[in-house]
Amino acid sequence: MATSGFFPTRYKMVFGTFLLAMIVLFDRILLSVAKDPVAASLELSDKQMGWAMSIFALGYALFQTPAGLFADKYGPRKILTAVVALWSLFTALTGAVWNYGVLMVVRFLFGAGEAGAFPGMARAIYSWIPLQERGIVNGINFSGGRIGAAFALPLVAWLIDATGWRMTFVILGGVGLLWGIIWYWWFRDNPEDHQGMSEAEIDFIQANTNRAVGEEKNVKIDFSKLFRSKSMWLLMGQYFASNFTFFFCLTWLFPHLKVKFNLDALEAGLYASAPLIFGALGNWFSGFLVDYIYRKKRWALSRKVPAMLGFFLASVGIVASVYMETVTPAIVFISIAVFGADMTLSPSWSACVDVGKQFSGAVSGTMNMAGNIGSFLTALAFPYLLDMTGSEVPFFYLAATLNVLAMFLWMAIQPQKPLEIVLR
Image (tube, rainbow, N blue to C red; front, side, top):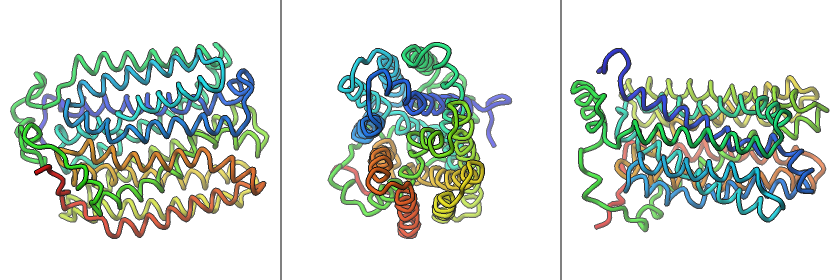
């Protein structure tokens, strides 16, 4: 493997995107942890809090494809810097809201700003990361989000107690701004332009990516072809199911545990962090499995097998958790479900980079748009189904059903076949 000194420069880029993923989920989970003081301060019901959580996902979903397109056109250096600055601003402004309407507007714009994060990362991965390393790199990046969220649950609960919920949002907004400044100073869109790259590492990257230098300057995407593509719709469908399961952990798991098992905020935070740690492990395991199978010359199976196994575990875990009467076994099975759901991320994003090539930002953004429509519905489905039926069981069975359907969708996905979406 080519190196640049002891630590290849491309791995330093991965460390930067890992930290960004931590910040993304850290900021995203804030409102869930701050639910009680925010609701008390603004006099909001559970359904209103559900809308406040879900409106973020709607803004996030609607701006995925445009953000990915901008990353393809202008490069991840400028776009990631811009979107991090934008959502960090709205993270801080959340601490200044004074009523429900303002909270909804700020949360929607916060989601719209965060929309460019993972499509921007995907575009950077396409240019910087060889095919045989993309599985573990995607796994590392998404594990960063889970680790960030896991740390956020108890840490934010403590920070809210120490400084109040308003100042907590301001402090964490500042962290994102600092990352953006460092990223713009250090990163370059093309590895050939980075001063830290050795010739050997540049040659290794160019020889092992499905990228031609300068290709992005000569072609444009045909969105009518993109949305007529069977592969695109299959990727969107399976990612809808994945996010429907996982987003529950970022919205309603913390308050659900507090109520069902009569826990205080710190206890609920510690228990709710366990599935997120398992999610990180699922990302690492899946990333390793993707690359291991790919090195066996099984390109398609390297994406299909980890994803289908993950959806199977998610289905089993989410249903089993319903029948646990105490918090520890319930968390064990929810952790298995999240481990499985997060196993689907590395193959999903690797497949988007595979089939999207120079349009990997737009393709991954479109898939993530569908996934976050699932997130939007999750944040609403849980409180509304609970209110309609008096039980959380229908929600968990709905999530399991979607996971089973996603397994069948993966049978038809062909990641080794690039999308024919060039504008002629």
